[in-house]
Length: 232
Image 1 (tube, rainbow, N blue to C red):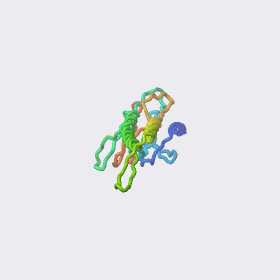
Image 2: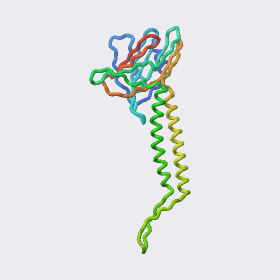
Image 3: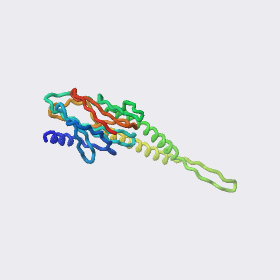
Image 4: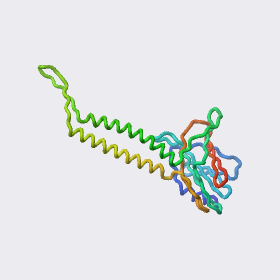
């Protein structure tokens, strides 16, 4: 009952979001392992060596690609403090050829860099299109037909061109603000290096570049104790 109460407290720290959950590979005949459902999502939890570690895995598809979102909770019930470095988490995949390959796990800094790179190219393409549109906005074509023949006449309106340039600039500024806000939202809740004191817990998520395969394994050490979780 005490363990269950602590698990409930730990789950309050983390609200997981995403597309849909992956299928958890359950450990049979392991008294340290149990599963819990939170908001329709299945969480795997392991309690040993005065530590409670939980994980959930979702597939997330957004404008930046398709990822596995790994959500974590770690509760420290020992009598000492320790550091936890999420960059040391290992994620591997058993592919369709029954070969094990490493998967790309993004740290908070790495994910921000990935998003920034994708946003940069989006901004460049948007800027080119906006610039071309603004450049053409000042010109207008008309067709004149008379006794001497028919011909096109192109005129330039400086006022229309200035208005189009102003509109394009405002749109670029708004796009930049939206991208910056998007980076802030994604950084909030991302799992980072922390010192976990006795009786405390941490929670957060990390992104893994999605690959097709048979089984994904996530393994890491918490205060010298190894924890491992598997998903189909």
